[in-house]
Length: 453
Ligand code: ATP
Ligand code: MG
Image (cartoon, rainbow, N blue to C red; front, side, top):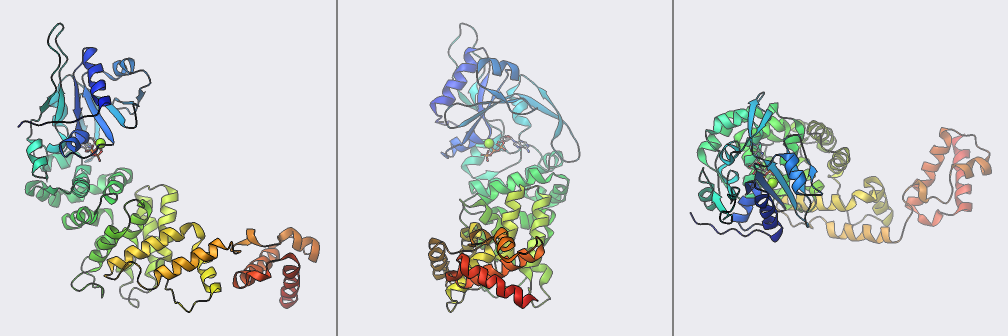
């Protein structure tokens, strides 16, 4: 199969440098696959017979990336990763190889790769001295180019064996199906269905890395549906998998999982925290099915989401933001709210989370079959903006007095009473920002104190 491959000038330069130093050099992996698809690759992967220390010599400024001998060359905007040909050994516990061995053979290197579309190379061996210039060509031992053309994900070799070696490949299949809009070939898919349970042996970090890429796809629902239908989701999150079959009176004929997937698709791809929050926003519903129904699913869901994201070793800050959104996702706006009501809403949610919460609600609306701005969302957003623009006092830092003022002016001792009075003052000021001056607040503090006694 004749293929034309366009690579950036930096990629050509890098191949040339390896060849001119007497080494084999190929573009491999996802970047080659993406080049065949005319998709822009963000990072370029290279394979060579040069050992890592040699690569470091050839490319001043290059740095060692990991113990598997990958060296990164920071040229231009793209990442260039050069990995020495290797073979993998001693797969144990259905995870990554315990030992890798450097080699001189491109074909052995391609054989260890997961899918045919990822097991191609484009480049050439080292030129013989005095011989003709290298002529880059496609090396495609497993028919990857045909599978790319057919948009098909097919395991290299026997799928079951490959998933027993490393169960992450099953998660990668679902992720790549979503990011590339590919289908999983039937035998590969059947092997995922029988081997999905092995995903339980994987570390949370490795699953999370694929999940994050999946959630950045234009429409993650395809990949998530694959995870649900093959049994992977039940291993990663039994609570999410339990959404299948739970009725929702939202879109006729669709269940709770369908609602979740629609919500994820509707969340902006550029807001990963909101995408993740969309995935878990109703994670508490199966557990609260009988209490109301779904009563307190926001609070229950916040705890379940925290548990899931902790197991996946998501960064603390990400988990906190997502859990916060789940906890607050059930607000109902009523146009009769006064401005004080809007301010209390801002106070409850916290200004930094507002944009993300509105984005989540817009997605939740679409996932429920109503317009993104249904239930007065636009109006609330606008009223919130107006309050924030007016710099209204919202927390203790904005009060015109502090604990020291209370101690000196009212001769109060240090202690919990100070905090109680400040909180009460803030509540009054949120309701009526006009009260926020020193004189008025000291008077109010005096009367609160008198009332306390
Ligand atoms: P992306 O475009 O999202 O980076 P990718 O296919 O390049 O997709 P990477 O994680 O960057 O994904 O992996 C680079 C290459 O390494 C893959 O194309 C594949 O050849 C190989 N690879 C990655 N993970 C595995 C694995 N678990 N088992 C076998 N081969 C793998
Ligand atoms: Mg890659």
